[in-house]
Amino acid sequence: MKYLGDLWLGISSRPWKLAGHTFAGFSVVLTILRGITYFFPVIKFEGLRPLAIALGLGIVYGLRKAWKPSQIEIPVANCNAVIEIIFGDLFTQDGIRIIAVSEFFDSKLGMPVSNKSLHGIFLQKCFGGYPESFDKQVDEQLKNIKGREVEKIEGKSKCYPIGSTALITVNQDRYLAFALTKADPKTCKASSNVAMLWEALDALWQRARIESNGDAVNLPLIGSGLASLNLPTRDLLDLLILSAITETKIKQVTQRIRIVLHRDRFGDLNLDDVKEHWTR
Image 1: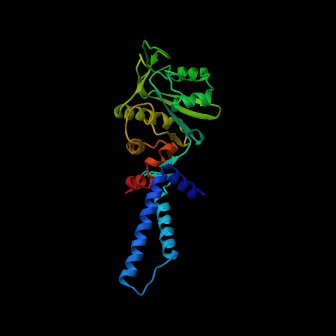
Image 2: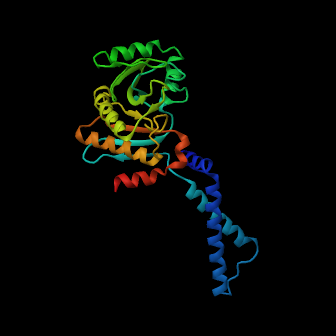
Image 3: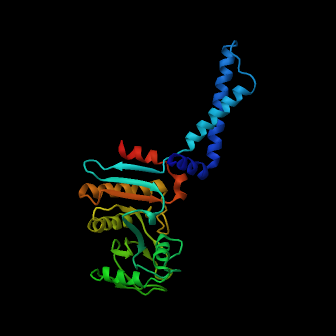
């Protein structure tokens, strides 16, 4: 069933590629059959049978090219940690979940927090648009971190250093909200860069090591949303993998670090290629 699910994802994400690979396979097989009859006239391939064979083999080739795995595991050398990469829903994964926020840890939907961002979805899904509990937990978690007051058009006015991290609990679920982006006080537009991403991840891993208690740590494709890093999907994924491996080799964070990719990224990646790159 998992194989069929991966196959369907591959077909639905780029159906024109299936058609192209099928036609290519069909053409090659038909050419081979015609070559055989040319050099060996006694062998006859006539009628619908050779056409059906060529078409069938072309379809098999097209389906094989369309299939891509939706889950891989990359073992980290010299320890028992593994980096898992899957396509799925961050909010359904077991373990602690990571949410990137701005330096203001805003909670108001609209200009401060887009309802289309993962942060916005988190606030709606877990707090139903009433984020008082979120604000209270953030204030408690960051009370020993020195922030600074900034005049801002909307939302919170106190900002914290990049990498500041707050543990947020929702019923039995645990989240680590960490400051990844700067926010323009005049427009609330979020921005970040690779240096800030690396700095934020470094601080995140320190906190995750303390809070995970051996549970899996689940990350989205950090930097792919409104952070404006403007990097291709594969480059962002490689940065996250490199950061996780680097930190794990210093001191293990947890046994399983899981990077959860949204299904709309399926057409951008072949996880087989990712695994081959990091395990060779």
